[in-house]
Image (cartoon, rainbow, N blue to C red):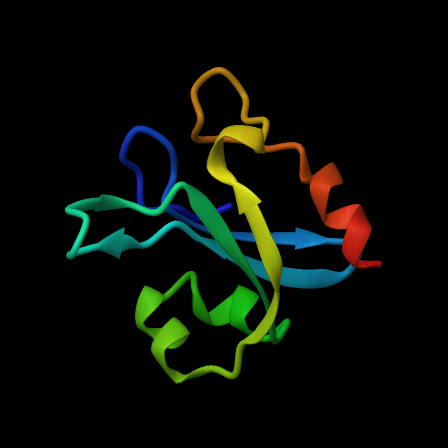
Length: 93
């Protein structure tokens, strides 16, 4: 799992059921704070290899919107850096 860490990770790539997902809680300049939702997007599996070299690969890929989830509804491990419970993705299968 990759992330851009703040109080919770704001950008996450995770593999679940042989699919790759990008979760993003992006900064809203107008509100001067981060979105309280993660936008969930499906991304190509080959990104898993490229992301190890550079996050810039995300700028060049095709993304498919899947849905949204409140950041507070995502269950992380106690460090909020190692694991998350991906069960919320089940609704998209």
